[in-house]
Length: 102
Image (cartoon, rainbow, N blue to C red; front, side):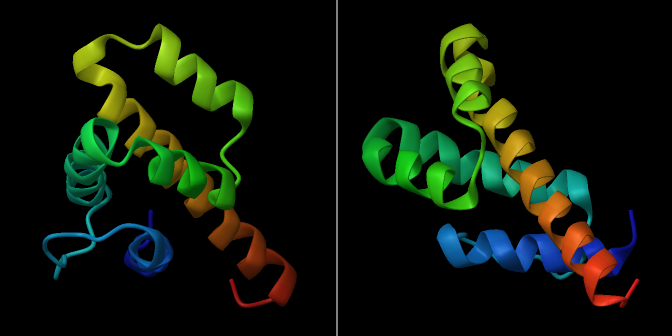
């Protein structure tokens, strides 16, 4: 994935999540790891807000339910982070495709 695509995806997610750190290198793996930490915190302390963010980002309800009910307990945060990352990445790609700025 291009650095620009990773950066745009990270910036989209940054609007909804309070990241404790900013990434200077936009590596998809690091971004998902950072997002996982924030989601793990929200699962424990801000569950309603996390659900609101998931719906605002338009993560499919079935996807969300599947992750919450079928993922291993210690994998929920990272599975959710990956799903949210992929959804936002998809939005960036769609916007680029239809704006002609690929």
